[in-house]
Length: 340
Ligand SMILES: Cc1cc2nc3c(=O)[nH]c(=O)nc-3n(C[C@H](O)[C@H](O)[C@H](O)COP(=O)(O)O)c2cc1C
Image (tube, rainbow, N blue to C red; front, side, top):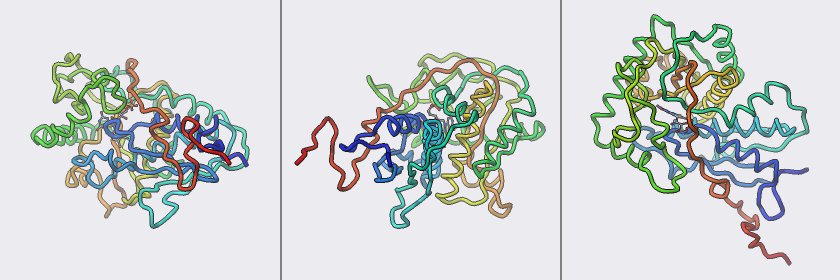
């Protein structure tokens, strides 16, 4: 069976397209904390712990959610290319960094949903700009809820009456971060401009300063306040949704990442913009206010949803940087493999 890899350990066209899609996933601070390793039947997806954003994500929860989003993109791309992805989460108990194994399965004809989701991968963006006050139709919100459910997540659209308290929670977390010098140091690492930089959040993605702060987007311009920023009024009452899982371990985070990405891509298909605002989930005591393990629900992401202006793409690392050679697999990059 064609497993997607060439004799020299390089991805063939199917696998290259799948890995490109995976690499386009959202990730905390655009850290792109993933690596891919050829497997005889498909591909192994690994965590790149060197890219963990330690201060805000000490347990690697957001790292694992990011990898889950990449796994979802990979699955959708494989389906769109006519092959069934067979997914195993945490396939080797002794290898905690091996987060998923995706085997290239039987041929399948992609349906319309898959085609739309696959096409949305390259257009989805995190949009930190003001959205219009156009209401999001309830049936579209229902579709996002169903998208999360398909991937074993629960998306709860925040009741407009409860909106201000969720906004207040996000503002509280954002203010606490701003008062912490260690946060500035970490943020500086992920927002410093360098020629040719292919990770981190660049100034064109910061968005304007929300004044008044009705939408407390994460301030990526904190360390470099003057860079291409202006002040703008955001929507008065943002549409917010919280993504939940029932439990809170690596497997749940991988599921959350897949559910999150299915929601974000479905929103993209419907012409919606989205922003992740996860600041309160990075403080256990604030996260608990959105639901605790006693209620059987753990908040994994907060999403702002609406109709926004176009948002520019942010860079991604090239495939070559993402692929590990498998043990025993010839190292074939640039034809170094010796034959015979
Ligand atoms: C788990 C997770 C948490 C995130 N948290 C935030 C956040 O709090 N604020 C924000 O503006 N973006 C957040 N993002 C979005 C990333 O910054 C964004 O995906 C990354 O910069 C790449 O940009 P893109 O989504 O436009 O491709 C988060 C993404 C993930 C996967």
